[in-house]
Image (cartoon, rainbow, N blue to C red; front, side, top):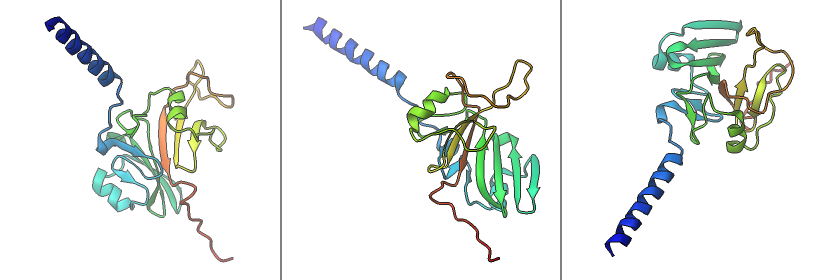
Length: 181
């Protein structure tokens, strides 16, 4: 009887170890990517002042026009897009942030298709990767040639890797600002 008990305990231990090694680790809530909502400390709809209160002054600011700007916080590995000083886009190229399923920068692009089956190629010319406008998320790759220059045109190889993840307002929640003529 003792031999059977040891065998049963050993089998249970091996089974527990195998399942614990393959389980997806839950990301830290402070570094969670929520499609159509947020990446880490920045949520869509936050004001510029709220973002600065959480993360300090941006390291870089690129003004697109009088209503749009991109700002980078290197210590947080985040780029934030603003429209009328409200967050409309949050992006990262860091693997410290992950979705609830564990998908993050550095993962094979094919994993994005498994976890987000509605993904399609982005509609923006020159972007490589997969996007789901209805969920408000994209997974991008920035391929380069042998000299390190960005590739123009072509398709992603099957073994592409996620270089960047962006969250934006989902198509279902977008409000079009219509001005009277």
